Amino acid sequence: MRVIQSEKRFYFLSIILLVVIFIITLIQNMIRYSNHSSYSVWVSIVYLCVSVLLFIPFIILTLRLQKEIKKRYAKWFWLLVSAATILSLIVFYLLSNVILHAFGYFDSFIDSEYARYYFGREALYHLLLIAASAVYVYNIKNKTKIIQVYKGRKLMTIGLELIEWIEAEGHYLNFYSEAGTFIKRDRIGVLAEQLHPDFVRIHRKYIVNKSQIIAKEKDKRDEYIVLSSGKKLKIGQSFKPISW
Image (cartoon, rainbow, N blue to C red; front, side):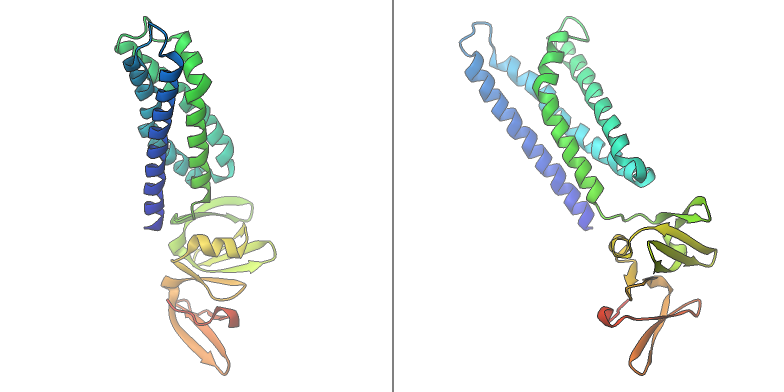
């Protein structure tokens, strides 16, 4: 829910920023070209509506594409996002060119003067927005229901619901399930935040799937989590109390 709300805020701020850019650029054009007899404020408005405000649906699609890239190709996120950014700017230029041509502003579908205009200024605004969306997506906590792990040297994708508990061992994490044990190079603190609230950290070495917890036992001063498989895991002193 928090991710959805933050995404809506990002869209809202992006739209506000594009509108502000539209207004500032329009005022600049009016001041700069008002003395020219051929200048028309309505031409500037149409140009800016197409080259600036038309980018609103593009930033929404861009954000969704970046989320998909992070989900499927997290390792290559920045490389793929950079390539997608260049492609999206080119596609947007071509689309806006076609629209302005349809309004009768250009004699051809591809206008070299408009290329200098768009890539001279508006493309920079769009690039900064895309970069901001990439940073936003990259820092979203991973709420996916799957995770990539290794079985020996084989990379596999498994559902998180199959994982019973996770144990830190050096620079690696062991994932225990009925299907066997898997490994992944990661930090337990980072993963615990990503898997919250479906998983709970009970020890500096352990993360447990909440759906697998069936009881909590106490033995003198020590407390243990009991899993559906019968496995008992000790609760660390600094992680008490544990609720699920």
